[in-house]
Image (tube, one colour):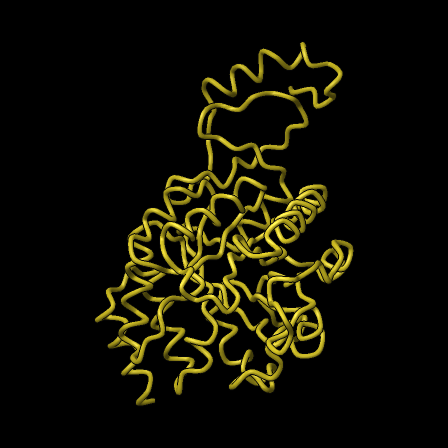
Length: 314
């Protein structure tokens, strides 16, 4: 019915007009279009609110973001700049019991290859930036460490890169993001931008995080990972792509973690990308189960606490 040869655009015009008028369907996440899964190779302008996304890109996004529009990413990439992090000294042992409860794993290629069973895994977001360490001069001076061809070989669902807005290396990190987006879009691989703050934790306020998140989206990131903060809705509403929470303030109790995650979800986040709050907890499996209940079952912080407390007793 529909001629996919873009050279015959006039023959397709009626169909496209009909599609734009009558068949505008998209998969939305908190009002943010993930994309209509439509196999078209034309230069049409989609109906308002609809993002035409190639099948491969849409499929990978659907692997990451579940049918309820929410997600729980488990990051275990900390060693790329911290070395053997507490409770992540042997990453395979840390990952294995948590993997069934994660929607995706944020990980480096080295740890992926050496510790994760390819027959028993979850969708992978591959960390592709690095080149600095906690003992170096400036964490912001990252580069791209992993090629898009390597990401394809590893069959990943997305790639992730940090951006350091407001640092001496702002331009370099944003151009790294842009280059990665160019390569990812060519092969249908989404890019997750991480709004890193290095050692300057005071930058975790709504004004800064909204700025950094919006810039990342403007440069083509399909998902943005950023920190929870007061007035988080200013961050989420100002970012036209899905936002996941990377973490929040230093807290002393599990309930405080549940509270900032719940607050972020209510204010526009689609999920979390939490690592240390899970695997450094004394009871990591009950912790991830409780967080999953907030994200996918709309549990309150108090209900999540009950899930956590019950899990501790088993």
